[in-house]
Image 1: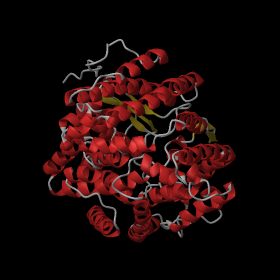
Image 2: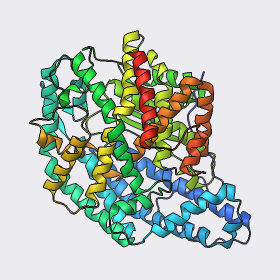
Image 3: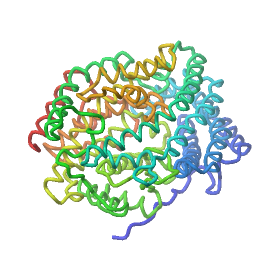
Length: 569
């Protein structure tokens, strides 16, 4: 089968050669759109669609600026181009986007639009109008510039290990080494490097916190946490609900994690588990799923195609289109992401593969995001494709679990396959305590005046609260700064609890998949194509599950995982 490249779709309202890079010309376009005369419902819908196409054009240009900056984080040219585009074009877009939404909101005709189709849009736009402050636009520009320096800092961290220079991420390979002394040496060197740079990261975070607190104050909020909760459009749950989620995980998940870690301790024949014992394979055999990124892509496509043929083909089309950058290298920003390319109805996958089983999880995870982007591309209203992360992460995490059986293509050996599947299923629940630590930490730092010393101490207290059986004795100074390796805290504040919510949803979908794969995939597809046309609980229901993170619900999910692991064990 010949795989074709992904091209830009034809524009409906703008010339194919129109570029958003000229601030003056873009201003004229925005002003022309704002002057649109709206006398009937059809005019209002067309106004929405034309504005959405313009935002897609800008969004794609923004995407490539960001992609190039992260692919070549050590090249100041790409960083400067991104910052220039953000400062000149995105800041202008923010201001005009508000005016476009205000024009829609102020039109009496919006109340005559079909409520089933446009009711949720009214709520989305009303929320963004109420929270927007023009004085926050230059602050957002400054915040973006500062947060980008985090990736630049981490990308430059290198460690000399056994005579070779390794990146911060590449050191993770040695944390899986069967030799405990090698693991400990690698772990200590890696985090000594983070400690060495911790004053710089502390200073960076203080600057970001100051800006973010100013944004909240400008919008009339006493703290950034409450502001961000509303700014992110979290209509379906409150701040107190997230705090209850923290407690529910502490109550229901920590005992499960301790059970699994006790099994790990016994298999490794250790008196106590140390941080460098948490990634190594308990049988001493390191999983090696692929030798190069070509193999990673081809095998992942085969696995995705086993769930649905279009899922596998989509990854191959992204490959031939040049929309993948997967291998880790010096000078590349940390982490992984799927960045939407709205004019192509596709996306770009970025990651830092070093040959680990976790790399397989990453590409399958990001492929779920990519399918979400593809399925929502026919939606003509921009805000219905801009789904919140509770929705976005459900798409990606579910894809990881749906492809669990397909891992046998990476691991033809039955024991290796079971090990990889066990790691995936166990990891979905074992991740939740770290998720709660990151979210709870942000609740505290944005509501409590504190010093750097107090901030580090509080993070350690959260590590203690959600400790699943790891001995940190003598390592407390490093334990206190582990938050500095979580890019979300620096770059996308309060974007993390969604992972926990979506993880529960993905496990519920996997439970359905184990009963009836066809029906579960059908529910998944129904969910994907809806985008954000419905409130979050309705979208979860379309997928065949609940939007629920109560202790009782979590208990049921944990028991399901226990049974799956019992079968594997």
